[in-house]
Length: 504
Image (cartoon, helix red, strand yellow):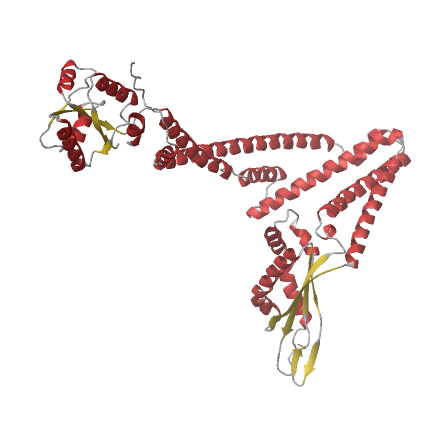
């Protein structure tokens, strides 16, 4: 019965593959840097392109708006009424109701905005969190010397914390996406004037608090954050207030945080809602008092008012922008152009952190996948144990010269062998590296110069030998060539004593 042909080994060790991929960490670092730069640059380009498109769209919209405003503003109220053909009485009525309609419409929009965005209007009157800060103010002076009252001190401190910069800081700390100006409603300060004369010294009574700061918010954490900022601002303002109203001392003597019902807030909310309803009624009444024949003139007047106010708002914003730069505009057109340029420069393209993170992950993934595929589809010798599991060969590391020499010497002595043939599927270079210094006693070791599969002279040497030593290199020797070489040895009945493995 014919023996089965030796087949190339095709086993895969998953753990060894993972370790092989991990050894490519330096490649991963390079790939991570490259992909992070590429994707970061792509995000920057896309962001810049989007901003440019948005700026162009805004510029086009502004131009269109300016053209529309210019067209509408070619005539004023008097000219619109003169061209309407209405009688004087009808014209006066249309003018009155158009003014009433437009005024109440704008007031309605402001009131509606206030109800939607105000911090105070969003609170539940039955569950209001309140933090109260109590401060003691004291001042002393010589007899007959006039000293300011505690009200002056309190007013100075309250003024320091009641400004837009403080409200902006509070909004930023709370992460509230609302107009910072609305925080003015939830922070109130008051003073209890308890000035008294004691002999020749004028003092402020310290039996209870002289200044009180009340903070209202929707939750306890918000109250405490606002209170923290207010306390810092009051402490930092001590020097400035001293310069304004004189030497004094201030101390926080109490702080109380509680959740309670607020009937006053409930009444405020009701009044604001009622005011919105009244404005709505005024808008509707102004519109319904217009005759059908007067609607065209009425609408034209309303358009005129809207265009007029839009032009004023644009001019005011432009002037404010120029004043912030410290320049006075020569004309409204120059101001508009300058404001537009400032607006474009204010928003700069950004690199997306998500894209950079994706680039880092992609670098790891690409190199990891590449190395895993190389390992999986490679048919080279990956581990020394592959020769043992796949071909049943005793495998030794090329560094174990003494052990190998002893094994060969014993084998040859036991079997009466005198001549061994050392061969490699990779050629002479690998063979010399493996067998150099290998000298078993009493045995002649012949090194092949070429594979016996390719050279007839080498094949003759193989036939004259008693045994074969196989020398291979990890990640270089092909399983296909190893199998062919082993098959040749088996057909010639030349035993393969062992395999020497060199690492890459």
